[in-house]
Image: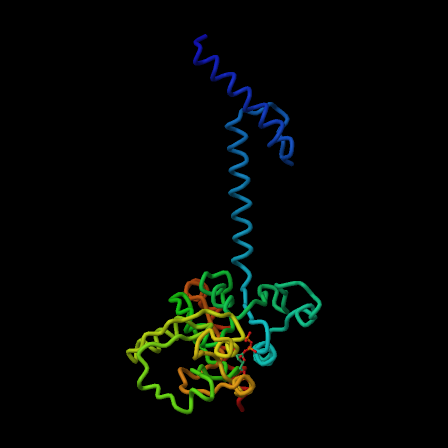
Length: 278
Ligand code: PRP
C-alpha cells in the first residue's frame, strides 16, 4: 500500500471517529452501520436543506403585519379591527414581553416594533405589510416599500423650529448654512438642498427640543402635533416641511407574489378607513 493511500485511509478513519462521536451520536437519525464520513456529511447537509426549506416555507406562509409601538398604536387599532384583524390577548398586556402575536386569522401574525423598524421589516420582506408614518417612509425612501393607503391617523407636521428669541429677528430666506438636530437627516438635507441651503445634521433619536438650549445647534427639524413640546422648551416653528399621516406600507415583492391575499387586505383596510370616516 502506498504511503499516500495509507495516510488517506488513516484520515478517513479519524474523520469517521470524529463523525461518530460528535455528529452522529447526537443525531436522532444515527444509522446502525458504521458510516463513511461523506455519508455523514451528505446526511447532515440533506437534513439541513430539508430543515431550512421547512422553516422558510412556514415563515413565508404566514402573512406578517408590523405595527408601531407607542402613541400611534391606539389610533391604528380601530382600523386594524375594522379590517377584521383581532390580535391575541397578550398583545394588549403591557407586562407581556412577547413581540409577535397570533391573530384570529391562522395565517396572519402581528409583530410590534419601533416605527422606524416597521419600515425596515417591510423593506426586507420580513413583514409583508406594516403601518408607518409618512415621516418614516420618506426618511427611509426604500423602493421595496409601496404605501398604497393613507390611514388618515397620526396627523402631525414636520417642521423647522428655533428658539423664540432667534425667531423674532430671523429671516429664513437669508440662510446659506444651518446646523440642525433631527431624527430625519435625509429629509432635512433634501429639503434644505432644494432651497440651496447646506444643512449640517446632528442625528438625535428623541428629545430634539433640548438641543438648542444645550448649545448643540440653533435649529431642529421634528414632528409637531399640538405644539406643546416646542412651547415648553421655548421654541417656535419657522417653516413646515411636510404634513404627516400614517400609511399602510406593503412589501412590493410580496404583493407581486401574493397579489390576491395582500390585495384583499389592502381592500379591507380601505373599507375600514371609509367606515371610520363616515
Ligand atoms: C414627538 C415629537 C415631538 C412631540 C410633538 O415626540 O418628536 O417631540 O411628539 O408633539 P406635540 O407637538 O404634541 O408636543 P414623541 O413624544 O413621539 O417622542 P420622541 O421624542 O421619542 O420622538
